[in-house]
Length: 213
Length: 213
Image (cartoon, helix red, strand yellow):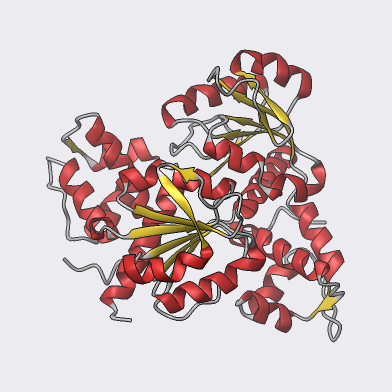
């Protein structure tokens, strides 16, 4: 399967397709036309056909898409079958929320460790995992070779920790630390800037006021 | 100040400018050139000049931007001075994380209520607020008129709750519920799809593998 020619815009939409198709599987929907999927997802049917044709046309004229097959293929493209393993650095509120988020159970990102520097946090249990000291993180990573680190720590600590983890072999960061990481090529980063997100919401509300909606 | 002609792409970048400028204020930086800002933010200086010229050119040739003025102007465009008030629906892990997130303190989104249906959660305290029963939400909203509802509840409950809150006058939703809301025009929505975000990270890690980085 050719995946190298997929545009970033399509890639950005794939998790959403994956999510909707997963919901359809739960509802025992076996196949769906691009038109039905377009209504469901509020995008045009031609957009859907264009997007999904990138992977070699899973749909069949007059039949539509086989939901399970398409879900599986998109999962493959997203690397979900790789079984990437994760650790969380920072056992505060965000760390708790992420450790308990269903995404680790349902998407296959096996969470294998949680770390903190706070003596009060170390030794406590979060979703079945005991919080370990940051002093143990080097040996833990060497032994368990996790792929992903979730950074749920204050921004002034995040860059230093990220550098340390890259040196230990972490290949991807899910960054909640309200800072941008400057990392070597070949290390993947996905930022979740909650503060940017609510500021965008604020702008949109203000915009509806100015439109007098 | 004209704000109507600002493109969505620029709007999307404004929170990031706001964040960086806020950091500069903390460091007592009074002015900055587009070149310095571009290095800091890893975007081109011409992009910065273009973006910021949309608001009528706060910068001066040879002087650069006055950091506090620019920060203030962007805050105005984002509506941060409006003092929007918020409630959280769902006192689970995400609700806790959001209630304790610094964004409410530093960005002016005054959090005034947290609601849940779980008897074990009702009456507990989160960051100084007592969790109230959903039975009280109608009278609370009528009395306190919050602008924003943070949806931190399971997706099968989210749409029903959102409809109810729109009818009560909520104008913006910060949606963590892993579903997409279908709401009337004039109601603003900002989705935080954590599951999509980590799937994107997964794709990026997989991509570095295929590139052999």
